[in-house]
Length: 148
Image (cartoon, rainbow, N blue to C red; front, side, top):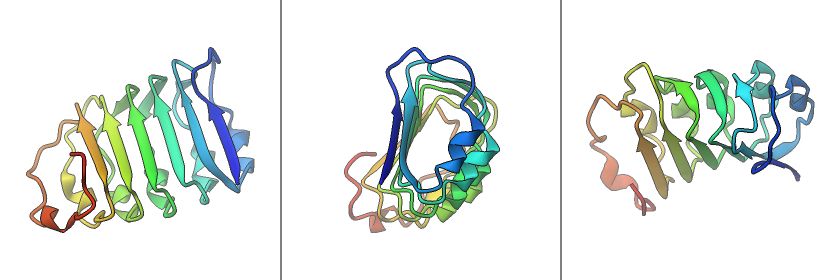
């Protein structure tokens, strides 16, 4: 298991794209104004990632579509950043998610269509994300959901 936690520090600058060379990394966490700019596309190579936490950073741009390729992801927390919406429909591939928290998106309305097959969710927090449609009709199948 490879774990990288860059949270609660005073790092500045950009997330180095060479971090994607750590191809067996499973946990990546960073926050408290640690980084700026966008997530480098090379992070899409981290296909063994189980958990990504990015909170209270200066990350900007759209939430990358490549996150939708991380099929092993069980925890995704993108809170308090400066990402732009909408939430990609590629996220529909993240059917192993147990904990999904996204907040503070600007520009763009998101549909809840991407969560329709995420029946393993126990925590779903979508705050300030400009959701434009209704709660999925199959929400009763989310038997593990304890926080909405």
